[in-house]
Image (cartoon, rainbow, N blue to C red; front, top):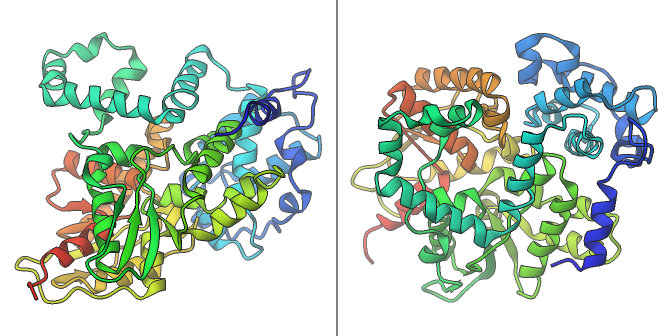
Length: 457
């Protein structure tokens, strides 16, 4: 964990100076100005942006937002509430980066702009301040506390408490904002990743590589079986797998919501946990986490103690599909009794746009016996999850979800595959509400099931 001096330096960087705009140089001022200047205003990003597609307003486009950021960096505009609301209306899906011919680093601009909004407190409100402090500063910086809350929520669900609470319509007693969020409560699994996966597991034959698996935060509570599937797939491909039972949050939630101080602290904690291990790769199976984990080098670039350690970390991080294709995974042998049938693939934004990974999951799916891969129209269009966007911008998120469900319905799949826990939950909730019969699963789970169904030698 970072020492007190490091924590104090990060905290100081997050505090505003005097005056309405903060006085001291802010996150956009300290950014390499060439990053702000990269945008050539060509407009190639416009048709790829879900919010611009919805409103047709320039300010709701990547190009418009970059213009606002540059105006702040040039001291031609103050950071106002309207600026803050615009930065949080953006999904952060990064579709614009895929379309951009100039290579604009929108992810860094986006995170810096939100950090400046939080530094100056232009969106400050007692409830918002309390929620951020509880969630970002409390629960998601303390993995033991997160698991404790997860177990309490599981007990509430498994005991019938949640059913009774809803049956008696006690949700009416909740504040309006909590009443809207309550139906989105995900089902918590009875056993988390540490109960499903041993700290070190060995393959049946001689190990070819030694890798670590990251279990995540939300995924650890609601999709721990995906972590188990990931380990099984790696074992089937000759890897020794290291999975520490208690892992910190990667910090993506913090970085994407303007809390760079906690994001840096969590990055240091993550690096410290794994750097004594002699690893060939660090494996993630969550697209949003992976996109952030690969940029610890950028996040800690100004920290002389951690700069090189972060660069070494970033060089080792691989998405599970990326790693499998890169190292030559083996195709499953034989056909399962009841294959998955018609499968379509929704591309998680931070996998296809954030990491440039689109081919590898499809290569994996095509090797699964009994699987017919049917392409999804607008497969790279955001489903509306976008981290916590479906909580902070429920109306716009619902529109995106409806659009995605329509595209899926046109394919008529038996299974929808997607590689991010937020997308999984969003699509599962949407399918349930629509009465759709298809399952929503992670691609690695389909591969794991195929390995398990192999005939005995």
